[in-house]
Length: 497
Image (tube, rainbow, N blue to C red):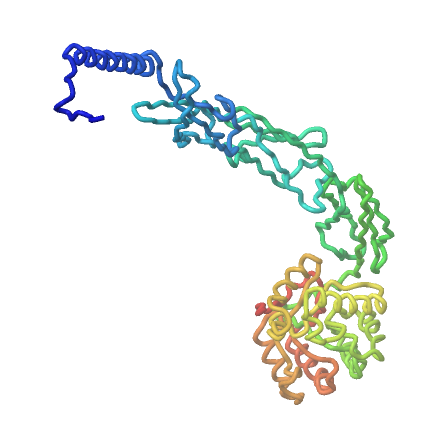
């Protein structure tokens, strides 16, 4: 069968064409209406927004100084009708305004954006100060407070988490054996602490002797015992002193007085001191010329020639002063002979060893007391007169202890002793062994001074041999020889150490 070509096909009627076009237009219109309705529903009726979801509580309270880390938040886009739509959105968090060190109310801000939408959310952060300060008490090892005395602070500090160091705000009150401390910070938080006071008294009372550690008085005088005692805790405890004494001022000799006292805690102190009753010095001759007085002094004995010297002195009825040592034990009994003959016996040194004597003040007085005890055994009396080895002006002592002579001079006065130097020397200390030279030295010296304190040594035979001539000639010239006593206006050198 033969198919006809297009030219041979019959044409569509015009009515059918119009009908098709109308149908397509209707369909397009319906589609557009549906799309418009859907858009109106989605973008008109349904409201789009960004919703936040905070992690944690919307209001947070933190203690001042406590680190704050925000828990964060999530955000999403959703619709009011189409709430099944959840589109996540990035969140920007701002915590810059939160100051954890300063009490107050702060806001953490959360921001999110999507297309034309943007939104913010906030979390309230409150910084509070409810922490009380801290008081720390310092403790010193083995620290104690004397009974009846106020507590002396060992130290403390106070710190606060907001205010920092508030030690200066601490107040304290001592009562009932304790110390109570209190402090408040700026927020009104208060802290307190207490310290129990440890009381103790470890020191015994101390004696004081206003008239010296040793007392010297002349026979017949009244002994008035001046002694006081004080305690670091109890104060003046003089009334509690117990005294044991056998002093007899009618008899020449050295007596020991013993003292005892206790404080309230049972600490006991004891002390003793010597009281020496001296014989009264002989009265100066009535016809004595006060401008012609000689004090003959002899150091370093007694020795082999002392007995001969005593005979010469006895022959001329003159008195001298002997500064004795323990150098010659076989002749120590001559100390008694010197004393009985009416001469003054005084301390020089037990050892005459400069290195030992001047090592310290304590070493000096140890040597001194050794010699004092020897004198007491020989004479029955201690002496209040002495001569420094080398004299008070010596410089050799500086080799062993700087400033010791100044110290000893002061201590000797405190102890009630009188030291004696010289203004005339015979030269027998090493300058000469010639008796004639010594004689001239001494004669020139006494013509220079109204009161001559002459340095000689009775352990030198040439000194003793020339003494008879010197005494004879001095007496012819009207000089008076006297022994040194504590009443004598003595001769002192300038101290050089």
